Image 1 (cartoon, rainbow, N blue to C red):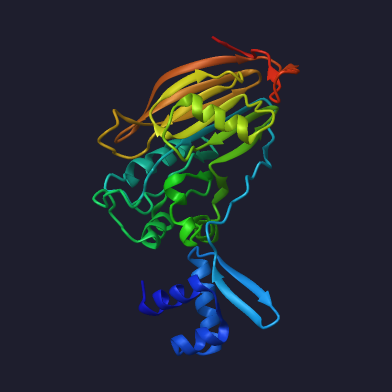
Image 2: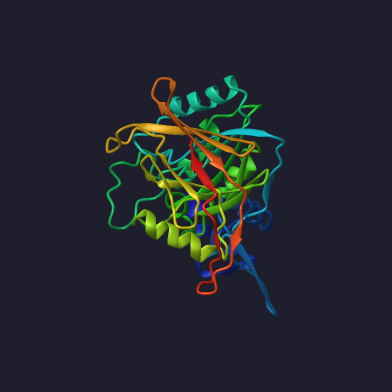
Length: 324
């Protein structure tokens, strides 16, 4: 980071007027304004605080990013997409070549959407964590690498949420989603932790918990977020492992494995998912030098029938799936 940037950021943490920024840095007014805009372009969140004495600029503290649940993908009878998670770019075990293979697979199979379930970058180490596994320590270097090296295709659109590793810089006033959105028009940010997507007449939740607990606790988090958690399918990142189960809300839950070379994982993977009429097909993909289709599971999805539950604020749905 440039010395002048570091000086401006330290001043912005305290809250400072334009005049004080000028006097403390020796820059002209126009240069100060350009510097603030350049910091915002890099993902810094800078508030304008207005009072009777003028305007103060202050680095935002841990802003809360609202859920974006307005994504609707209309379909006629069939829709196929890929889902990946936990690429951890900036980690010493990152694997961009393998990530490129996923996008090549999408292009070859005429798949237009890839959903990313978060932890796109490694992020900053926490206070009690070692930096040994971080390849690029500066958060801006990680985001620069992502925006330049994450696969780009004219025929594939990436919809993504951000996870706990991506969020680590937000309490310091840096929201990486802003930088990604400005630099990569092919990548669409849907929110931190969760986003609900409607595909035809089916509802899908993209989910990336921020804590390390268990599937039951993660499902409880969904119940806290949504009054009627009526999802046909929950796509979950964060766990790094592969697994499929049905929860008490009658949602099919798919834990999507990580997409980097972590030595603690048995394999890296992705999923090809197809909604076709009232069927759901989950096709696991093993990632190495190529993309290898592995096991597949097919479900019959029944129409939803809401059952009112007077004992709970959560309305139940009938068992609406059947494994084929």
